[in-house]
Length: 57
Image 1 (cartoon, one colour):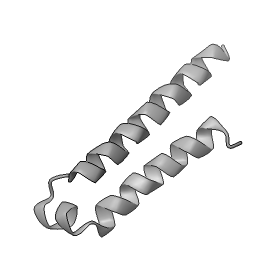
Image 2 (cartoon, rainbow, N blue to C red):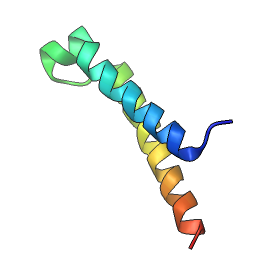
Image 3 (spheres, rainbow, N blue to C red):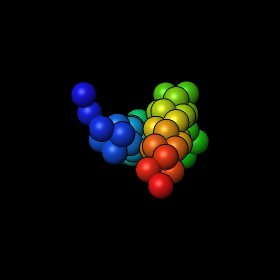
Image 4 (cartoon, rainbow, N blue to C red):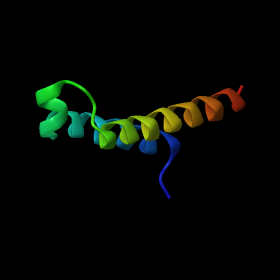
């Protein structure tokens, strides 16, 4: 099983890669529904990682 940091990095990489390769996102400079979903996944992973980090204190 991967760690929180790995999940966060993977979500960020997936979003960035999509934004670079999606024709709609690139041409319109407006995120498509897939980009919005990937960003939501990244934000959820970021929040989860922050909560896990706060619990370590």
